[in-house]
Amino acid sequence: MSMKTKIILLSILFIGLNQSIFGQITEGESILREQKTDTVRGWKMGGVTALNLAQTSLTNWAAGGENSFSINGLFSVYANYKKNKTVWDNSLDIGYGLLKQGSGSDYKKTDDKFDLLSKYGQQASKNFYYAALVNFKTQMTEGKDYATDTSKISNFLAPAYLLGAIGMDYKPNDYLSAFIAPLTGKITIVNDQDLADAGAFGVEPATYDEVTGALITSGENSKSEFGGYIRVIYSKSDFEHELMKNVALMSKIDLFSNYLENPQNIDVSWETQIALKVNKYVSVNINTHLIYDDDIDIVVDDKAAPRVQFKEIFGLGFSYKF
Image 1 (cartoon, rainbow, N blue to C red):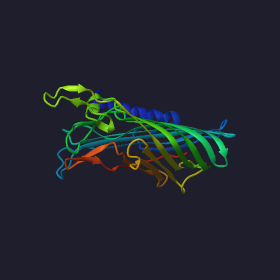
Image 2 (cartoon, helix red, strand yellow):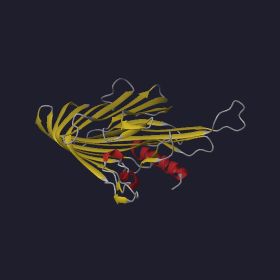
Image 3 (cartoon, rainbow, N blue to C red):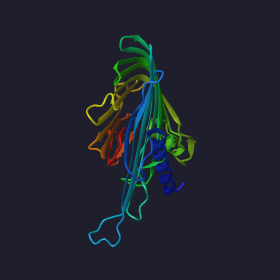
Image 4 (cartoon, rainbow, N blue to C red):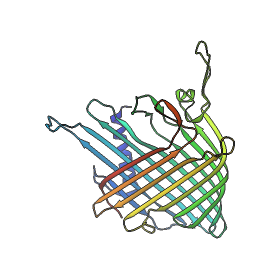
């Protein structure tokens, strides 16, 4: 599939999702919308979505410059159930972005995320619930290290993370949840044999004959861990619970410690989404993601070691909110 086809499909995907969930949109505009439905049989649903396009075309431009095109899409929805002593929270976050800088360059990926979560709980006492959580994270397309070369460093389901946890959930209100799970299983999947053979994302690498270099055993495609897990989410992103007028905020942090290997090295994933409605027509989206994973080595100055990863995406565009 060509990159142009991917861009067309990406645009259709996000526009279609907006039409089906958030109503009609104007073609080509940047969107930030939120929706909160009335409670129906205990369900509350809503979401935030954004599609930002930017393009520059220069022909015989005396001042100089470079052609460019970028597209960034965000789709984040939730469906939460609460009735009597039962709570069931579900969320789906999808993000994707592409950039083309210059006429002769290829499209480069700037964002790629798929995050599906489901958490079920039964009330134990006021504000406390016995709870079980399942979370699946991955990316959708191949990733490359554009800063140094174009070598492949990730791919679809490489990595993917499947996490299951049992513990207690503290929910004092509708916008704060603190889930603590002393019993947690985590599986890291590397469904790309080249990356698995290289031992990417902490899986067991391939072994080779020291003399001939011949492959002896292939790299493992998965790694299992057992440990403790904490997930805290603070979300004021609907009309009932806005942080302040026309400002929606969602911040979540995941902490995992592997009991079986270096439990003192905590894996961290901290995401924040801020949506601001500047005025009737203009909106701003800010998304940040900080990661530290002791199993992921980042090469800097020819030295490979676990390092803090950070991503920030800023979007400015026309908006509509209802």
